[in-house]
Each structure stands twice: as C-alpha cells, then as structure tokens.
Length: 52
Image (cartoon, rainbow, N blue to C red):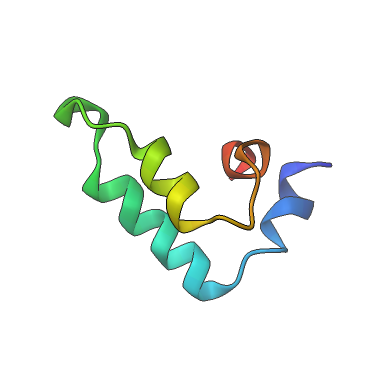
C-alpha cells in the first residue's frame, strides 16, 4: 500500500493528533514518540504509522 493510500484512511482529527504527538516529542528531547503513537492509535499498525 502506498503512502498516499494510507493517508486517505486518516481523519482530520487523527492527522492533528499525530502532528501534535510528533511536535511534543522531538528527537532532541530524548523521548520516543513511537510509544505514544502506538498507545494512542491502537487501531493502526506500526507499519501504517511509519508510512504517515
């Protein structure tokens, strides 16, 4: 599945939450945003999150 196809499965609220999680857990902070993403988006696989 291509990234564009995957992105069409995301709601606007999911897009906003995803962006918020990424911004609140910058790489420079030493925190891992993957744990937060996986916990919040329980219905999405890690592969789908990675394509985002």
